[in-house]
Length: 239
Image (cartoon, rainbow, N blue to C red; front, side):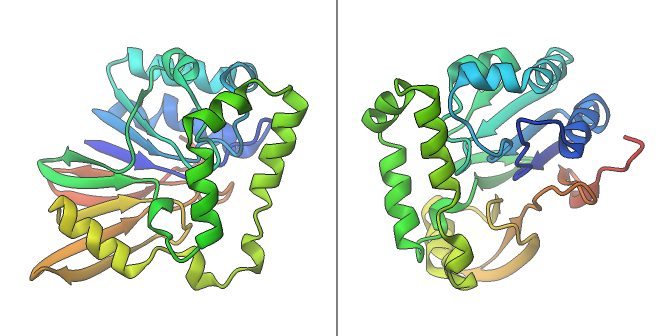
């Protein structure tokens, strides 16, 4: 049994979302063989040193889950793409490339945070290419903390509220190309905060795209995949 989730956007201050995530790690997640976190677990990430200090409870809970025998995999999101080896090691996370094909219950599945397919948002894609550049990241990590916070705050306020909704969603042709290139019949991603199932035909094949839900205090959802298929699960307040 595999669990997948994304877009929790955990703040670095006390929050019901953080409490719900810790409950998930100590409860339902213990039933899984593996947990995949497809990006934006954290609202912002300015460096591993700060992240280890701000999110010590989450790092410890993730490590405890890994030590219990549950494999943990992580993809970077658009908010926490600077999460590095130090935090991953402390939390027991294996960082995956984006996108990546994995076998979920025997079905080859393409996993991604999802922002790579929002190709209609040209300013964001330019920012994405720049921010993932190793040289840019090298320089960023050596800026004073206040400067890194300012840059991160500017990146968060990227004008998405002024962009048409269609631009913020994935591009249909980019999705079709991904299905064709990777030869899979299933894609799972997050990022868009538009949880649903899309069924389409690509190269004469029936394929499906599953969009993960973003977490909110009143609704925390994860995807369960097993030999019987997939289903959305909601974290109860008792978990």
